[in-house]
Image 1 (cartoon, one colour):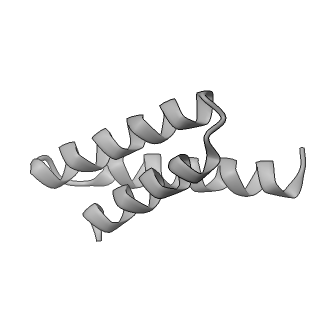
Image 2: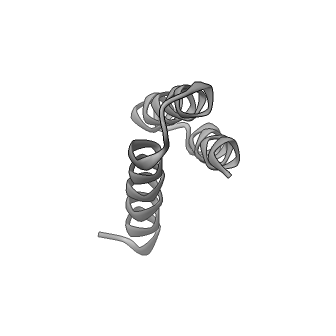
Length: 62
């Protein structure tokens, strides 16, 4: 596993855990939406979009 792959894995896991811990409501739903878009971007190998969506999910939960 390359350092970049490891960093990506840690970031995805961290954001997913934050989404799961968030209290129910519109912020949680918005964060999950961004997380799902990040997963899609990851499967499409669009890393720029993936990081943008992960950051957006993090912002929503902040």
